Image (cartoon, rainbow, N blue to C red; front, side):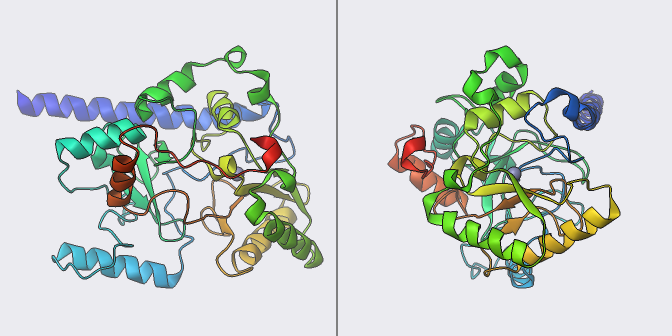
Length: 340
Ligand SMILES: [Zn+2]
């Protein structure tokens, strides 16, 4: 009986995953007709970093080697790896995250739930798409490379309410209709670099000027996005990779379109790939893209991660949760004065 039930559960889970994937695809196709804020001149409406469906691949070779060494060390029980490479880092050969497998005490579970809305700590992992990796939480376990699941960056500012789990926040936002959002959330994304984190603004403006000098026809179509605007985009289905936790909400991400923005045109695509190669080698490691220069679910997104936002380990998150005593411990954005 138990075997039958578990098979049934597996079947249901597979059906749900498939249904979500199909729904996600159809949302992408209809996005142009439903989301007025999305520029019409591009075919890829997606944004944002946290689509768990594509393997992270922007790491340097050094990062990859360190990650691999760390995982091997972990597997054979060596404790000498640095704290920057926990065993729950990255994805396996099938593109599935190395979810945390450690035991969690009741106190740890309570802290993670209260501070960060985490219902099941065994769906935590560290993405290797950004410097040192960032702790993320999947509201459902990812089971195959192309299975789409929602990932949230732990400790990121968002519309999640105090006491709400990510699962609850996701359901609430998905059920919201256009009229449920204030007009400020429905407005277009900010496009000015003046709306970025003041610390990064000059670097971004210099990069854009140098890109134009290098011959790239760059156009900025989004800079800062409020958590409410991110939620609006997600609810309206503006591309399956929209998320509720984004570096846009920290003024540390920009969406850039190249030339006519039509990724289906060969010339545009080639120029875009060349720009993506260029920007990732510009000024050290400052600018990150999603996926690889040639392959991505989000062509526009360029982000500027910072070690002062987000966690690299579960222990870091727990330590902060203890300090804020289980209250909302999310990192606050650092924005220009007039936007606060
Ligand atoms: Zn973006």
